[in-house]
Structure formats: C-alpha cells, structure tokens
Length: 592
Image 1 (cartoon, rainbow, N blue to C red):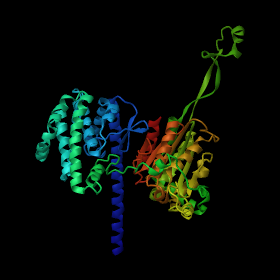
Image 2: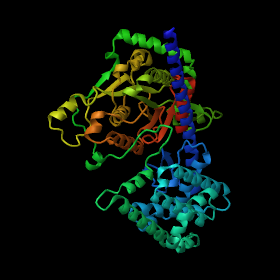
Image 3: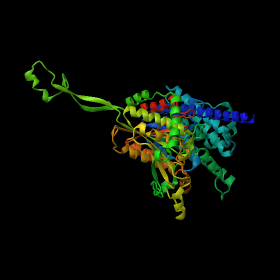
Image 4: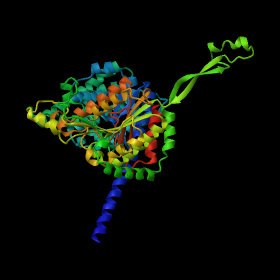
C-alpha cells in the first residue's frame, strides 16, 4: 500500500512539473509576441529602422540603446499589455524628441542627479506626444502608473531618499504632462511635497513652459536634479558617516540598475566580462592540448546505440510527424533559381546563332531563339549544433527526435545537413585546469577545460547511414559543461568548407539548440562569471555582421535573445511534437 502511495505522489510530482513547464512555454511565446509587437510599434513611432529587443534590452542593429529612465523597463510578462507598449512608446518618443548629444553633454555625473535628470528629460519627451495619438498617451500613462505601484511596493519607499525620489517623479511628471496624480499617491507624498516646494517650486513651474525646447528645459531640470543630489548626499553622510562606504546609495543604484530584468520568464543570463576587457577583448584558451573531436558512433557501444535508435524511432512514430511534407516545405523555403543550360528551338528569347540557317532554308520557321533553363534547387547547408551540457540531459531524447526529423526532411529537400554537439572532456577544468594549478594559477588564463566537439552526423553521410550516430544524443554521460562561443565558431567553419554534394554553395544556416548560458566552472572562477557569455555574444555578432552564416538560437524553455538576434523558445516538455516542428519551420520561413 505504501508503494502505491509513493507511486501516486511521484506521478503527481511529474504531472505538476510538466504542467509548470507547459505554462512557462506559453508565457515565453506570449512574451516573445509582446516584444515583437512592441518593437514594431517603436520603429513606426520613432521612424527608425533596425530597432529590436534582445531580452529586456533595446538594440539598434547590433548596438544596445541606453534607456536609463527607470519606468521604461517593465516586466515583459506583465498582465497588462499596455504597460509594455507604454514603455516601447516612451522609448520611441525619447529617440524622436530628444537630442542625445546635447543631453549627454548636459548630463550630471553623480547617480542621484543622473537619475532625476534622466527622468525629467523622459517626461519632457512623453509630453510631446501628438494629440492625434490618444492611444499612445494612454499607454504612457498606464506604464508610469504601473511603475509607481511597483515603487510603492518596494522597500525603498520607506527610506528618506526613496520618498524624495518618488515625490519628485510624481510631481514633475504631473506638472510637465498636466496629467493628475491618483488621489492615494497625492495623499502619500503631500508632506514631502510641501518640504521640497521651497527648493524646486520655481523650477517646477518652468518645466511645462520650456518643454518644447530641450536647451531651455535643461537648466531647470538640472537645478531640480542638483537639489535631490544634495539631499541624497546629506542623507548618506548622516546614515553612514564620512569614513564608511555609501550603503544607502549603493542600494539606490542597484534598485535602478536596468541591465537586469526581474522576470518570471527565464532569459539567458548575460553580463560584461572584466577579464575580456583587461585582455583588450581578446579571448584566450589556456591550452588546447586536450581538445578533441569525436564521431559519436565511435564513442558509444553499437548495442547501446541500437537500443537508443529503437526508442527514438518509437518516439517519432508516436508523435505522427509527416516527414515527406516537411521535406517539401523545406525545399520551397530553401530553394533558389539556378541556371541549368539552355533550351533551343524557341519562338522568343535570345537569338541562337546555330539556328540562323533556318531563316534561309525554311523561311517560315522562326524557331531561332533560345531560353535559359532555370531549375529550383535547395542550395543550402544546414547545421544543428546541440548544447551537450549537463542541464540538457533531460531533453536529450526530444532534441534527438527534432534533429533526426529535420535531417531526414532536409535530405528529401536536397539540402546538406550536419548534426554537431559540444561539451567538455571533464568537469571543473580537467587536465587543463590541473596544468594551470601546477603553473601557479596565473591571472586571467582564459578558457580552462578540455573542449570536446561531437559529430553525430556529418554533411556527406546520408541519414540512413548516420541514424545510429544521431541516437547517441540520448547517452547522458556525454553531457558535461559547455563552451558555446568556440562551438559556434567551429560549426561556422565547417559550414564555410566547400564540401561535396548538394548545398556546396548558397545559404548557410546554423541552428544552436541550448537551454542556458555558456557554463564552465573552472573558467568562470579563474576569469569572471561573464567571460564565456560575452565571448559567445561577440562570436555570434561577428558572424552575423559578416553575413556568411545565418545563426538561429533555439532556446529549450529559455529566451536566448541576449545572444541570438534570430531566436525561438521551444517547449520540449511533451517531446518533439508536430507543433514544435512547425515552430522551427515557421522561423525558417520568416527568415527567408
């Protein structure tokens, strides 16, 4: 009886976990759609092409766009779509109505002053919204009110500095935009507002009057920022003393650090690497002596591969995926017109010199032209690069099914397909880490581990001969740690090789399947935690700028937008379903 109870509890736990993953996937898709719609509205309103979001950060092309005003950074999974849309509209108005060069020249240099000056300039830009756009004005109002509620719920509202900042934000925005404050907020800030009035009253009155002139507005905004800055310094010295670090101000900076996004939907972590900056951006490997590349079919016992293959075939059959139809769809997406000789004896086209004699011998025969013969061919090389780090173990079977289905379909479409993987030869540095320790642990050694690159199927091997190697993705002890940037470089280099057979020229497409940021414990400890992250982003950006390879990030339950401009979040909690296959197909269709 106890055993039955335990089985039921375990089943319930698995069911709850699956439901949780499914809910997360729905939220991921909703978040992605919200961000894409917000970016489209932002481009339209600002009149600037190339604006898009990577995670919570706005980019123009490959460069991040700074948006320091704190209320422009909502949680993108917010239950109120107008809140995120309001943030996007606010960013658009800032880009359209504010001179960034002038603003940068006038901006003060201490945190409290910068924050106030940034907020006031943002309020000025938002006040200039076209009266013919009441929806934009409503979105802006909704976003600011949502931010105000979040501020009220934060611990900072109970501090002296927090209530000053909150009051200045409320009073100044109400004055500049002429939008009234909610009564409960007005009651909350009444006493602080009265205390500040003698210091900022005159400048506050000028903000609305000067809002059409950035240079005329700035002196009054700077005066208010200076008042708040001086008050914050007095509070700092009173609370921490002259000889102690500025604890309250540090808390204030962390609260308004907009490089992070406290989101319920997971986004791949990303940060700037001090070690890379010290090394002038040059990525290093402590040693490559232990790096290896393997054909997976030679790493796993044949009997074990046969068992994995049977399980994989059963999983794919159970999902009912129509591979021939997928192949036809891929052929249409990947194919391009290719010249394949000439057709003669035509009544129109280019004059064929070899047929001119007909004009003399057969005066009625006008078939003296030729036309180009055009064939549609899938001139493409497609590589799947699978992250074989430890956290991907549970998705091994689902990923194997996905890449197996696509390998078969791409072969039917006439495209060349490779399936690669990347991991490490050991945990925590392996032999490379031991060499570094024996050398006295020199600072900033770069990548510290034995990189292991895996070939599940190469481009010249047909699917039928490679099918057992693909099943090797289900062997869990291959999965250790991951150095993503080097793996992307390796996969792109293989794509650039001429090779033989179909797809030797034309489009080169790399699809990276991963569930997280690059991770190698030894490298992170010896350098810094962002060393591999920044290297990955640098590598992807370099290949995207060169235009030689189209790189896509397929996030397994994760948003990979901080690394890959083209990205898609997949829900593999139910395996590789037809819906998942169609999602990837839709992404490729959209990229065309």
